[in-house]
Image 1 (tube, helix red, strand yellow):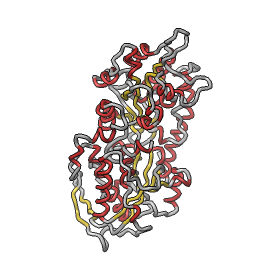
Image 2 (cartoon, helix red, strand yellow; image 1 turned 120 degrees about the horizontal axis):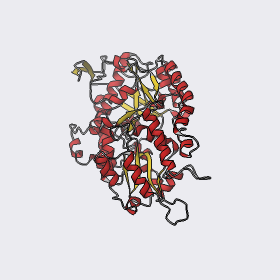
Image 3 (cartoon, one colour; image 1 turned 30 degrees about the vertical axis):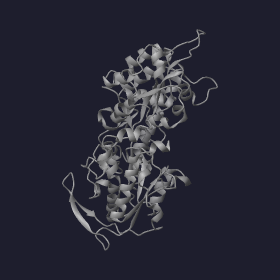
Image 4 (cartoon, one colour; image 1 turned 90 degrees about the vertical axis):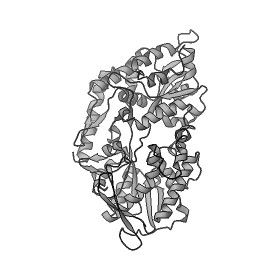
Length: 487
């Protein structure tokens, strides 16, 4: 998992690669405010026409970015030349502008969602930027502990560098509490076993071809499921299964692939439970159909929690909906067969293949004043610039043009097994906004999106019955979240 994080094209990659120069930095340096001795400022226009007073000398400022997963040691082992290039470039940026940029894991002493508000409320100034998974930010937002980035002159919302998805996710009312760079992170797709398709008389490239032609639908997927599911020794017991995953992954994959969501937001930033829509019901009924037709491999009695992963690894499962980062796990690394990776097929409620976008974002605590917040944001802007450009195929930085032809295969070639996974699935997930489906359930404390599937897959309850059973508790969680943020 950590190896995968290191190649992300979004801000997580920046965190892994930008933490250089730490060994030479002082234990604590007091930042020099913009415009004071030790700094030289210049004005530069922005995309929106506003004028930003650019800091040329940060006066030895130390910028600490807090997260919940980084290792203490500086990472100088690079799996690609692009990673090394980003590292050296960011190191030169710090030297040129006279500041240091460090990553610090603060979650070793407690829960990140509780630690961040506590540190800010205490007046702690050891951390200048907090990095948030979207499910971690609400306690800080509810207490107004983060700067509204729209109030900072150094932030230009019109700059295409900034992720529109992150701006939507972290906007409440008219306030923007965190932002990420332009690239979005790939999420759940579908691993598939090429040998099993071939043995069923199908082209092993069929899922890629259907995806490319806009025909990768539930209907086509069902046809394939019927062909690959087999009792190979005629003993009345299925030996090759069509599809399986964790029950949580199956729930979200079905919902998102039909253009539905568990939770959405209205124009005022108010959360809305959307499990009562036709598209949501269709998704749950599709899962019910997979089980009723005997295509879904349910957890066997006494089986391990990794039953689906083990089946895919051993070559007895054809399709496995899962996050891309499973490629760094033994279940994929030691899979006995060749495999591919595509979007999950789409249902009648969607216009094409979709994935749910999961946002992370960077926020600045209100424990620093506006002048200091401006400086912090400008340092963050500088340190994320090259990664944002690379993720957007912008090779204008000196020396970056040599990666134009090799970037994608370098960044992902050791992650995905074939070029079609990189060039057709991953790049589409990262760049094609038409495939992005926003779902905010991760931001809701106590919201349960994973417990829909078990009873449906095991045919204990119908899709409609399970939705009605789950709705009261989840609606209560959504309402509580709205109260928390003042909506």
